[in-house]
Amino acid sequence: MTPGIFPTCLEMCRGQPETAQMSSCHPDLSVSCSSLGTFTLETRGHKRPIISYSIMFGRDVERAQIGWVRTGHFVKKLRPGEHKGVGEEKYSFALDISRGGLLYEGTFSELEGLTAVEGTIVRCENKGERWLVNGQLVASSIALESSFQLPPDLQQYSLIPAFSGRGSWRVVEVELDPYTTDQKATTISHSQL
Image (cartoon, helix red, strand yellow):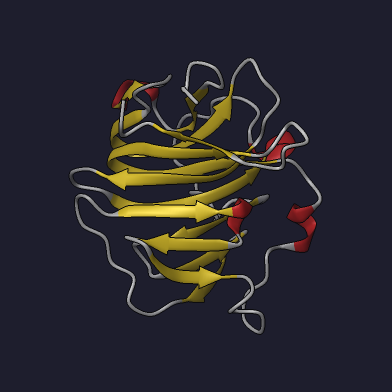
């Protein structure tokens, strides 16, 4: 399917708009931000929620946090100025590549061996149940049952993808939840357009 049928868009929800250059709608979903910013990935004109997505790091990425936020509370209006990133703020959780772990509302769980360079692809699957870095599983709410579980208070709410940091980023894939009875997820690859 083409991204024009089920479009997705990037929006800045934290940070200084003048420091970010965005291609915010398909087929090019990319950001270059010289100061810390938080961005959400949302659908437009349809009701298929995003269940998985992949981000490719560009140049000079710092403080990379990739995850999910609760729509009704985290995402309201653009809030300029200093702020916490995804996973540090209330109603959010993320894989924190820079610090090497998982974050849930500011609580940090360390993971070993997380690193990222230009070209690294981070995939967040099934609304935060699994994170992969360059195709390698680095975190799973199933595998880490004793130390990390998908936050139960977030499971029951509508979640949308979000990422925080500085530098250049590109959304390379978006997977939508099935909307019809065929039970097949729709994957939109922005990297092949």
